[in-house]
Structure formats: C-alpha cells, structure tokens
Image (tube, rainbow, N blue to C red):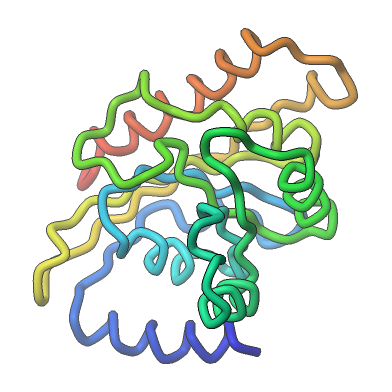
Amino acid sequence: MLYAFARAVVGFTYKIIFRTKVTGRENIPREGGVILCCNHQSYHDTVVLGLVSPKPVHFLAKKELFKKKFFNKLFAGLGAIPVDREKPSMDSLKRVVSTLKKGDTIGIFMQGGRQQEFDTADYKAGVALFAIKGKSPVVPIHIQSTFRMFAPIYVNVGKPIGFEEYHGAKVKSEQLNELAQTVMDAIADLGANHGS
C-alpha cells in the first residue's frame, strides 16, 4: 500500500520535473523473480528504476539507513532489504532469495554507493550469487541524466541475462566474479548506446 502510494505521487512529480525516455522496457519480465541491476550516479536512480519496473522493486539498502525507528518503518514499508556492504550476512542472502522465489523484483546497484564514473572493475559480485540461488535472470539497466529541472532522463534496458547452467551447482568465487563482470559489461554497453 505504501509503495503504491509513493509510486503514484513520485511518478506524477517526476513526469512534471523530468522528461524520461525509456528504451527496451519490454526486456523486463512481467512474471517471475527478476533482478534489476543498474549504474548508480544519483539518488534519483532508485526512483527511476522503481518507476520503470512493471512490478514493485525491493531494493537492497545499507543497514545504517534502518537504525532510526522512523526510517526503519519507512524502508521496511517500501520493501527494502537491509544489507551490510562490508560483510553481507546469510540472513540478507536468504531474504533476497526468498523474495525472488516468490516472483518479486530485486533492485541492485553493483557499485554499492553512488559513483560519478561507471568503472566496470568496481563492483560487488553478490548479484551473481543472488541470481543463481534465486534462479532468476538479471536485467542490466543504464540511467543517464544531469537530473536538473526539466532535463531528460535516458533509461536503456538490456535483455535479461540468465545463469541457468549454474542453478543448483556449487559456484566458486572466481566464477561469481566472472558472471558479475558480464553484468557490469552489459551495463557499460547500454551506457555507450544511449540514443542509438
């Protein structure tokens, strides 16, 4: 209920303030669990990703945001999942996997915090583990904008990346890094092809 209300209000506001142009929206599956993976340049990215997705997005958020009672209730009401960026816990993994297996959508920024430059070598490899354990595809997305008043927001959505061959298998950390790198490279390609 809170998510739907927030999306309606924020969505209306963003339509007035920005001009959003989405390419490839049809690449986001409407059924089954899915991970939306995006670059992270601005705090606006979370909102834009939520508006582009056909289903509510459960974002991974740093655990520090949940410390205060008000924000704990707010983020919990929005479906966010707290994670420790330095030492991801088994509890967080279980919550993400459970969310995916219920057919819901997870939103992840692989760079962790906001970064002005998109460095394909700077990422957290957890997305690959989540995708494998949750048996869900990863949809790479690139967002580009200055986010100034009335500025355009370009959203480029790529085709889902599946790791089906690894489902049920024991995957080494080196393999997880390689799979995560595949996602990062896909996001970089989408960024290079804005407007084309």
